[in-house]
Amino acid sequence: MWWRHWRKIMEDMEKEFEEIERMMEEFMSSAHEGTFGPYIYGFSVTIGPDGKPIVRKFGNVKPPVVEEAGYREPFVDVVVDKKANEVKVIAEIPGVRKEDIEVEATERVVRIKAESGDRRYKAKVELPVDVDPKSAKARYNNGILEITLKPKEPLKEEGTRIKVE
Image (cartoon, rainbow, N blue to C red; front, side, top):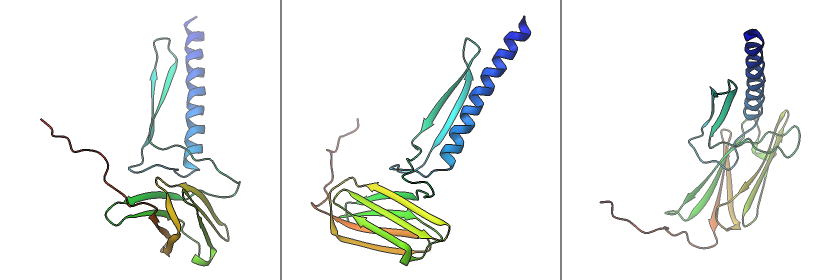
């Protein structure tokens, strides 16, 4: 009797670990979208009162949606610099030449596409503020693409200072 109960627990745990493995493979095969560092992803496994494993995910990284097969989404960060009054999009796209990179910008989105041999990257980056796409400047050096855009309206500090007692 106890043997069947034990086997059921082990089968349930095996299914949960297979799901965890699938999630980790999906996560590791993709890049991070719209997330600002530090980048954290993890899970915890505990056994519930009914003897079944409980898997809880945590972190600020979501697996990105791949637009087309064969393209990898690069690691991208968006920085809003209020002092310099500019928005920077920084993307890691190693292994391509600057001639192989295409960048398009609208008021709220920057699209990046690069192809060189077996290296293929594609990203759609949503911007936190409206920008002037005609102000865009892009630099590529040592695998890092940096796109600088000017916001349509000057960036202001938000919020009110609060005294801590």
